Length: 111
Image 1 (cartoon, rainbow, N blue to C red):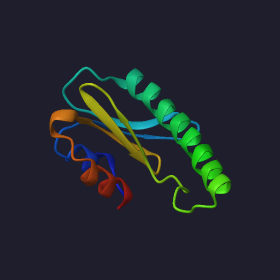
Image 2 (cartoon, rainbow, N blue to C red):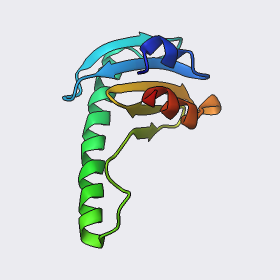
Image 3 (cartoon, rainbow, N blue to C red):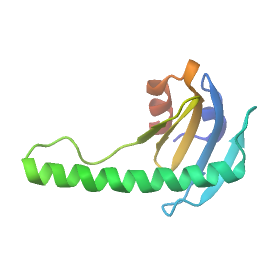
């Protein structure tokens, strides 16, 4: 399982965090940049909310179309102008977009 220090070692990582099923920030690491604990707490809630919405949509789409492969949702990525947040399994990493490696982030989150 990933840990916050290993997530912070990813290229371009500016923050790493863990959160509860309700979106409450549990632990975090911050690198250089404008992010702080309050921003990560909000981000954790955004990730839980968006994962719940994506799960609802994936399950509905599978039932409506009888097509498989949309559910379960295994992670969520929020792409911003300067950075992106990649989350899975109650953890997340914020990456600078100019050096983000999404595949490496998902791999680290799912190890």
